Length: 328
Image (tube, rainbow, N blue to C red):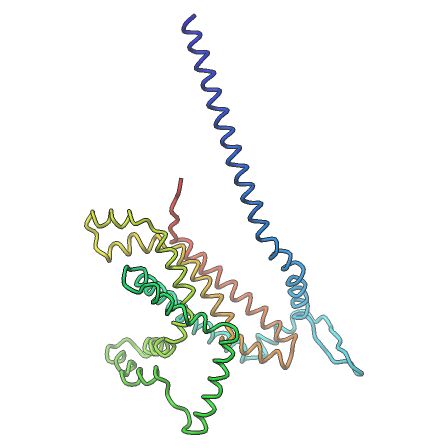
């Protein structure tokens, strides 16, 4: 009888534990649902704005890319559906668009890795303990602030004015970066090392565009800094105890831990660079819009598809090497 009582009490204990686990799972599930509802609540203004404002514009833009606009006598316009005629004209009749598109992609192939490498390098330096670290972080983020909104327009006006004055006074003068490259003569240096002229041109272009690279690296630096600060100091302490060098610690601990940030920055940099107002393809499409709205719209949507394909390819390649830390 005693044995039967003990077994019954064990079964009761097991039943109670199972009920507690089910109750705990229900609480966790309900908490996750509440978090999901809160997330939708915060996203709701964007969803409403996108559906009510941006979605009709996108639909009308797609329709315009498949149409032809003609001016009606007496005022007004007539929109006629022409299928893929605008896309065919942009790709096969307008040779300048394809040439501009290829050259723009080639330039960004070398500019985007340079931005990512520079941003990661500066983030690692600014993450070190040193006097005035906050001031240095603010200094490197200042170009991002200066390149937005009204300040960018004022700066552009100043550039136009200075270029006009330079043309009137003494013609085209070399910039400081061009003078540095000319004094070092990188091209002759690489040719003497038998690296070829192609690599010399790439390095020369990167050095000449160092201002743009620094100007476009501010947001990426912040993202890398947030990723570096999320790494537990205990991991670095264990590496020091094991006798790992700084080089080994970076490649085996720091780099894998911030690989998700590298993916985020790569996608952000691609979209930011391809849609920048200084991009040659964007400037060409903007100029084409003044002469033909339907043709420029078709160019813009084709350019959008190219950017999406590049982003998808880069995300797919980077995702294979991204390390995600599992948290129980």
